[in-house]
Length: 118
Image (cartoon, rainbow, N blue to C red; front, side, top):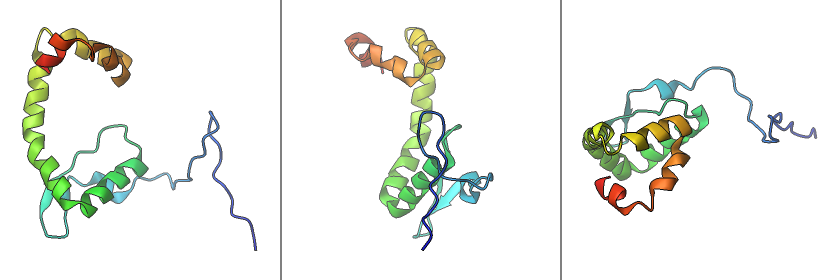
């Protein structure tokens, strides 16, 4: 019996599963239909690996209550995010995170006054 071939290693030593070069068809969906017929809006973050996005969609289908709860919170969350982003007291935080990535936010966790605004 032949030995299965392992995926090639990328820089850094991690193995990466082979892909067909195309995107997964469900990733382009704007809505996800749950088993009960409910349709929820889906937004895959830009840059999310296709395998991770597919796993997210499968999780939402398998956990319809979590999917519905998340969909119900989306409009309010977008408004809250925009309000925080427009707050002049938080501008430096957003600029730092945009420039240095999400890990830059860690240095603000202990700032009680700043976190109270969030």
